[in-house]
Image 1 (cartoon, helix red, strand yellow):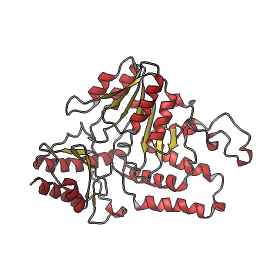
Image 2 (image 1 turned 90 degrees about the vertical axis):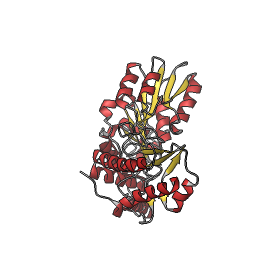
Image 3 (image 1 turned 30 degrees about the vertical axis):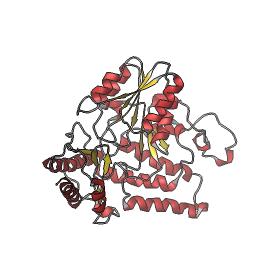
Image 4 (image 1 turned 180 degrees about the vertical axis):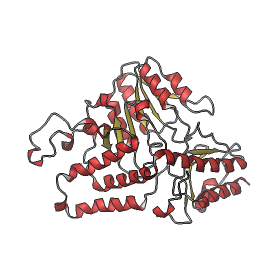
Length: 379
């Protein structure tokens, strides 16, 4: 069943055609309101009790876990994708001569940390390339072997939207004794993922894209096998017993339960947590599966219109439903980005492809403006 347009819940002017959620989602009014309410708590700090340092975090943690379909004990609150990936790298073994498998031209946050680890451990990073216009799965599976220490991939590529079959990759990684680390920043909230079947060791998602939240906060899934690991920072609030402010100098060597030991310092940031929680509420109002179906219908319609103009794109099944990368067989038209900007059509040019990523706030007028602009530029 189609989801009605939610434009009325966002502060997007009618003349603005924002088809660029993969760059950064706009904030729904409910998210902005929640962030303001969170900020105002510090206006009267005498009303913010010690227990609030914990309750505001746990409310977000529970929502994040519910969206992902996992236990709240497996969720850590982090500042960014790179923070979560640093936690993963610090807690996964790697021996000299072993490899980390990544995608070619993968987003840097899920590359730099592995380059550093491989250099330090005497290993190397393998960036696989797609052999064709198919998805990335075959290339990843072929690169995994007995020497693989970590497979560090997304659910879909950040530039072209083509997917990785994470069930098959996870199974192959485990069969070879390799860990699976996922950057889900460009998919979680827009495309379902069965964590119980995929079984990642770590999976991180920043909130400011498809989770519809603010910048500066994210969620990290940590498999229970790693709950005894070492955090990358040692802050006071992650230690056991930190709820008792009167005994904070009774220093403890034990931690809060589950993935909480990996939470970032100063995690009790009410504006970010409350805003991010409101973003998750927005998504869970419809459900991720329904959102994926709706976005797939929208990108499919756009793809069909673009094909009539001679542009190319991968079919759904190869690409993620919420991603549409349009290719120009004769090259990117001169002045395309300038014309798009003049007409307030907001998309992203990534390499030689135009990345179009709509969401529930987009109207038919947004799609019409994009196609009309492309038609004029190709004429």
